Amino acid sequence: MNKANNLKLGMSANKGITLIALIITIIVLFILAEIAMITLTGENGILNRTNEAKVKNEKEQAREKLQLILNDLIIEKKTNNNYDDEVYTEKLKREGIEIIETNIEVEKTIDTVKVDGWKFQIDRDNLKIIKDLNEKEPEQSEEAEDAIPSYVSEGLIVLYDGINNTGEGHSDTATTWKNLAPISEQNVEEANNGWLMNIQQGQTSGWKNNCLTLDGIDDWVKMSPLSYQNMTIEIVAKSLSYKEGNQNLYIANLQRGGMMIGVATNAYLVGEVNVSGTYYDVFSEKEVINNKIYSLSTGYNGENIYFSVDGDIKKNNVTGVVKEPDDNTVFALGVNPDSNGYEGITSNIEIYSVRIYNRCLTEEEIQKNCEIDKKRYHIKQSEELPPLGYVTNGLQVLYDGKRNTPYGYNKGATRWRDLSGNQRDTSVINTAGWDNHALVFKGGQFAQIANMNYSNITMEAVVESNQPQGTTGYIISNIESGGYGIFSWGPFVNGGIIHVNGGYQNCVEGVTNQSGAKCAVSVSYDGNKFVSIQNGSKFEKNLPGTMKMSSVPLSLGYNPEKYGGGLEYFYGKIYAIRVYNRALTQEEKNTNYEIDRQRFEI
Image (cartoon, rainbow, N blue to C red; front, side, top):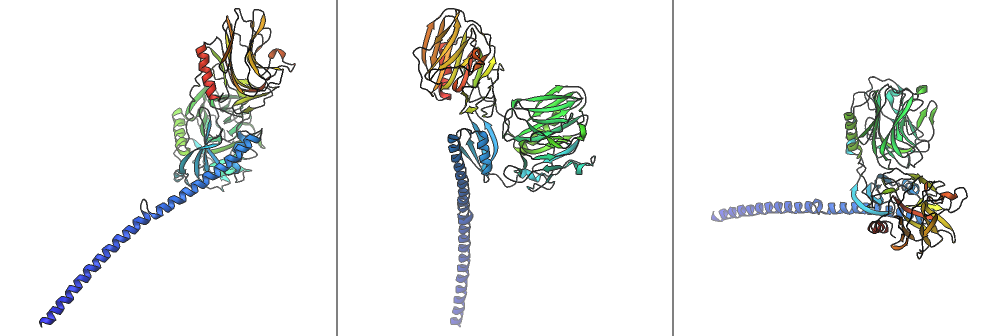
């Protein structure tokens, strides 16, 4: 009996031990499983490390691809005399690299580009990757979930949206641009959809990244004929390859009537309306910047034309009505339409959104739509560039090669913009173009500025002379029985000339420079002393007297007295020009020289 009881007790004890062991085993297994899960999925887990390695590898491959393309461009720039921004942008396009934003900084142009989804910043001028933005653009914008954006709806008759180009999201194969506006009051051209004309999906044409790209060859979008006595047109667009002297039409129905938004031949954004038979323009304050997205609006209410650039609204007081275009002309994107299709050239642009209203929006409504555009299409304001730092007292002309427009360097510029505030822009005749932030002169180019006569004078220039041996070329002058100038006597001497006391006086003795080397020249006259300084080396003459006035315009690149004879043209490059209506002090000249020396690497 005792033996049986003891056996039962032993079996019960063994069962208890086994149960405890089982529980412990299960707990250990849970712990091991948790450890395994942490090892796999934790912050430093195997899966995360594997994913991080994959992401890092993808990014490095994108960076390497971009670097190889930039290396090709560096070789192209060194070997191709016709290298320019167009060569650069076309190369990126061919390689599938998208420029998604361009910012003009103090001395350089910075492009944000997308390579296989990864974003990088490039110094366009030096062809260098300057920053990895450490982000990959999502396959689809989160904004795409917004089927119909909340723009002002009253009077809205056309709404094209790049994010939702079909009414049910975005499609890269769409052949029409779906009108998302209410259609209760319209029954024309299938509810005012946009018809894509000649557009083939590819690197330079078609849908991509929530916008429509027009190649500037024959692409355009045909819309419906729409005209109201008061109306508003709005567009979100980007110019890709605008050059001064050309024209980009973003949206238009100009046929002896109608209205338009685009870029004028003077490089300014413009809103144009035909009011009662006469065209009126309202221009932006700034020149267009290629690869920058703009939100633009033009409207007319019977009294004022409104033109808005990124919410900055200008207006022109004109009384009348919008004149209906002849021949029932349609609206169009990228061209100027006519009754047979379109006339003139097409525009190389990207279009993100289009809106047309049968009334003129108020300024508050224009601002509201613009704010939606800015958020939806990530539009950034253009930043003003800081002052260059040169002496400004008495400054009459300031031409700067690194900032040949008020908003940065534009290699396609045909005008050299005056940054002094005196609006003395100049255009080069027979231009040889720009090279490395300098205007090129090859013995046949010249530019007239204005008639500028002063009793005291300072002229300053940064040049690189290649003047032929034994010849004289004028860098800047108004020599004609009077006047003043800076000349280059080939190939080693740059100096000053003025007409004082009945004759010309030179100030060049003892100063020579290597041919092809950059030289900062300062020439001044204060009624007593004639001073010439080159790269810090000073020579002066005591010359009391009065400088005789000239009868010809101050000019670049030649002696205007000899115009027509083909003589005394300058050979070389001009990086900067400044003219003052007084003689600068030595301290002021030193200030300007130090800025030139650093900026132009003299």
